[in-house]
Length: 141
Image (cartoon, rainbow, N blue to C red; front, side, top):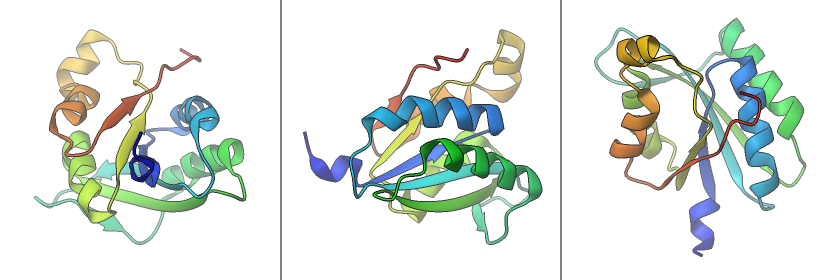
């Protein structure tokens, strides 16, 4: 397998509980010297996705939960709070913005109604990303 694939992994997290599930799911699969780009998407108003320089309180708590579980000295971490109108769109935009080589996430626990309203962001991300996307099972669900 191509080593460059796991060089810069974009990992979206939606909440502290999601951060925990995702960190536990990807932890056994990471090699040393991998860069993890942890992202959280907040509702934006502009037509384009932007990366906020600051972290709001919710994103900060979400990032902390992820780091508490996954932190290792041999991994590099980057934190990017994205602002966008649609989660999947913001994440596909961010792939190029952060030079990600892979996207990895655990599925969100959404019922049919929520999936209808949100438009199934995970499925849309899988279809529209221009890098490979790995979906890890959420063992906590």
